[in-house]
Every structure is written in C-alpha cells, then in structure tokens.
Image (cartoon, rainbow, N blue to C red):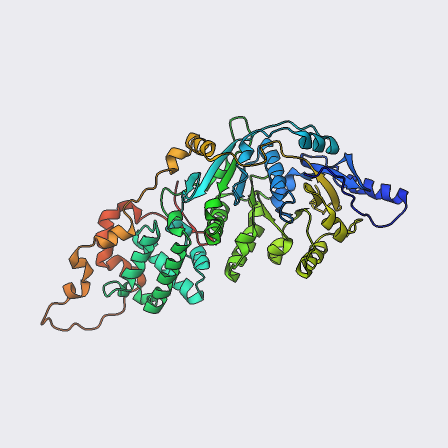
Length: 526
C-alpha cells in the first residue's frame, strides 16, 4: 500500500463536467444486490470515500483478471476478494505459487498503514482469519497430498501434456480403451508403461490387431515422453488415494466458504506439473457439477496466481483445452481468476472471456514495456481517464477496475484505491502450516500413498503359459489349420487368455462402467 495520494489524470474538461463524470462512474458501481467491496474511487487527485467500487457477487463466475507489475499488490487483491467470498459462503481455491497466501487463515496485524488505508476508503478494518485447508501436489511440500490416477486423468489430457501428435494421441486412446475394457487399473505411470510394453510384446501385439494395433515406433515415442514427464515430477502426482475434487466445494460449520490453498513453492520450477493438475481439476469438476446457469453466487471461485506459468511453452492443444474449459465451466457456477503481470501473459481467446478486470500499475522502462502498456490500454472500454498515464502512476494497492454489472454489461473504468485484506498479509511458518494440515479432516484420508495391485502387478504376475499363447496353442507337428475369419475386437478381448486370467483376479472391476467426459477424464462411483 502507498501513503501518498495518487493523482489519476482525467480528460481535460470543466470542473462541473469532471464532477458529473465522477458521479457517472460512481453510479456504475451502485449495485442493488450482494457485492464485494474492492475500495473507493480515485478522482481528481483524491480518494472518494463515498464512492465505493464493488463487484456483484453473482458476476464472479464470469471469470476475471488481476494483473500488474511485481510489487504492485496483486496478491493482496486476490486475498481481499478471496476472504470476502469466504465470508459470503463461497468456497475458494488459491494456487499459491510463491507461498505467501497461507496467512489468509490468520487475523491480520493492525498498523498505521492499515488504519490509514481504512480511513481513506471509508471502510472499517477488523482483523479476521478465514477457514483454510492446505494442499500440495503429490505431497511435494506442506499440505494434504493431491493425487489422481492415470485411468481417471484419461488419454486426452495426457496426450496434451505429453505433446503427442494426432496419431500418437489416437494410439494412446486405444491403450486406455484396452485397459478400460480389460479392467486393468492404470493407477500410476508404471502401470501405463506396463500396458504399453505388453501391447508391443510378442504375446500382446495381437490384442489390438483388429483395430490397427500399436506400432513399436509410436509406443517408443509414448514411453520416451513419459520419461520426460516423470522428470518434471509427475510420478508423485499420479497414484492413490485419488483426491475427490468435491473437497474443494465445502463450507465451514459457521457457513463460511473454505479457502483451499494449494501450496506450490516446491513445484514452481515444474510448470508442467502445475498445468497438468489444473487441467485435470477443471475437467473433473466440469464432469461432476450440474448445469446451473446464472446463480446468485458462485459454487467455487479459482485464483491462479502466476498464471504465466500455466501458459509458458503451452501447446496449441493445451490452450484449446483451457479455452474450452473456461468457456463452459461458467455455466457450472465456477469462476476462474488469472493473476499475472500483464494481460498479454494470457492468450487472447482466454482473455476475451474474463469479464472482471483489476489492473494494477505497469512500468514502461523499455520499448517492450511501452508496447505492453499500449496493448493493455486497448483491452479496456473507453474511459474518462488517460489510461497510459494512470497505469504508470498508480501506487501500490491501487488499480484500474472494470467489472460486469448486474445486467451483464461492463461498468465504467474506475481508478481505485483498494481496501487492505483483513487476514494476515504474509505466510505462516512451516510448523504452523504442518499443524493445520494434520488437524484437517481430510488428512487421514489422503496423507498416506497406497500402491495396491494394478496393471503393473497383474501383467508381471501372469503365469508362463499365458505369456506364450502362440507356443501353447500349436504344438510341433500339428496339422495346419484352415485360416479363420479375423475376430472382432470384442472377440479378441473376451477370448484372450489374459482376459480369462484377469477375470478371475479382478472380479467385478471388469464389469464396472467407465465413462469418459468430453475432456477424456474417467469417473468412478465414489
């Protein structure tokens, strides 16, 4: 936050017209329904405490962007919004890349700067902590481990993060289809490796013969991609117990929404791990949640800090998947906020779907900075401000805001002095974090990894007579048989010796229904 008064320049006009323009902007934020309070209007060099800048609660599933240069207050802004959502009974998901959001669980510390900011924006400040749970991808860091099985993750998303081409993606789809049909559980990456190796072996290559089979070259590409994938830390993410994403939709006993903080400092150098998790999580929620259309308040709001990590080096297929997910998940009552340095960090097709914008200060020290500034200004509606000058002059904890009003149309652009969060603006120490993790009702369910019998163990344990079906079916000197009509895929699957062996060991799992969503994820009854 800044102790100085920032003067947002306005378009030259008479004093009366300036006052009229300020009243018009303030009127654009005078909502009748529930709204979150961001701060107060900055106009003509002063903070207008009587002109609050707000965002309607019902519009927070229309997604948003919080952007600005390093040190301008982006993280505090998402913390401010998150704690107000929690107070309204809305669960929140925070991707904490830098590790400085855990303080949302503890009351803030009052000081002169906080008191001054509260007086400037005309709002009372009361220290408060909010109900929070802490998670970590695959247990990498401080938090309840979040894992997914390879089976549920599915071939579509896995192909995207492995950067397979269309032919390789189709082959991976056949591998998953075969495993689904045979009841072969793909729990972790070694299970997938085992199935790929079997389907390219002498005894297994005939299993997919009726639908084209799996070439050794394609299998090699998939296996090499898996090796690189594991080098990014993915082996820890895939496994059991698989996290039920409904755990992010909970409220506390007092009715406040639980803030789920995904601690990511341990994996900030592994952006592919972060991207993979996000894709699975959104696809899983999309599959499970019913269509709700317009709602009075969101079912869940995501805040994805350091969003550039999500898109850096992303494939075209990955971007298409994210774009489609963001577009469709709104109707499920889920809002997604991207937090990054400049709007250009977010692909245009995603940026166009972000109806709520909080733009902190930008710097223009280099020609590239100037281009980014000009591009940012063009993403805003026409306004009474000289935005290029305003955006380079904003202080810490100040921003240019436009949101979707209650009728769905953009509000006037408003330079805003933002409120201070009421929770602790900084991290809690590791010991306190670990204590909170152990105290969670989810800890016992997910803390300990389980490596039960799955595809790897079953394929490794096949008896010798089933590993050499060709030798077993035709003895020396046996008369040649007339050629038979090529069996169908179903006949191949049901008639294979491996199927009969697995049927005895898997039992009802083979008969279970595996459904895959349009994102390729599979769901099991929970």
